[in-house]
Amino acid sequence: EAQVTQNPRYLITVTGKKLTVTCSQNMNHEYMSWYRQDPGLGLRQIYYSMNVEVTDKGDVPEGYKVSRKEKRNFPLILESPSPNQTSLYFCASSRSGRAQGEQFFGPGTRLTVL
Amino acid sequence: GEDVEQSLFLSVREGDSSVINCTYTDSSSTYLYWYKQEPGAGLQLLTYIFSNMDMKQDQRLTVLLNKKDKHLSLRIADTQTGDSAIYFCAESQVTGGGNKLTFGTGTQLKVEL
Image: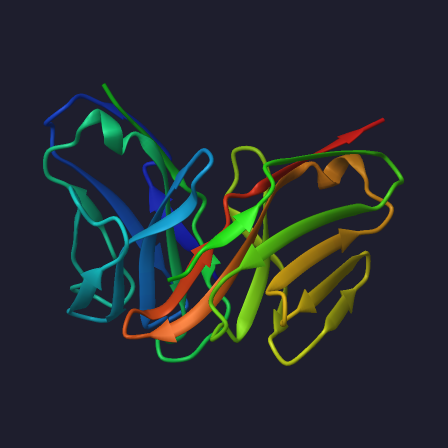
């Protein structure tokens, strides 16, 4: 089944404790991105990747890092989480970043930073 | 810059039609999307429309696009309780930032019996 998976689905952590949210897709997609969803703000792009080893900042990249060592995986790293990073996070992928087309979303990761 | 706006809430009775509205600002958008998010779930693509179209119908869903006014709407006919969800419109641009989606704030649809 074609899908985007994220782990964990739920995470409660404390300020400053490094964490990684994994994202994996099995559709051989080139383009992957991370969004965060906050009430009244919709979804905002954090980082995106056009292909392996090619990543760049989205609209709200502060406090986040990403890597793209393999085509299928695009982990989101919070080196020192803060309470304002409490949010619902979505990973998405699409066939190409150079052409418009459907983006497939993961199920979301709900993160709480105390 | 890009900006997509939606009203936050809509309440309808079961069996009535729902109309969810969206305005966008980027006239270069060539794809416009409607996503549905059920409680605790991810985003499900409902439908999309090319910017050279005025209307697209898909079963109970009708999308209308007024490019001059940059206005997009989603009509759900015969609304059912299972349609209760948050609906996001999104515009797509292929820029230096790749295939980026800019989302509206989402409209929470509540269907009452």
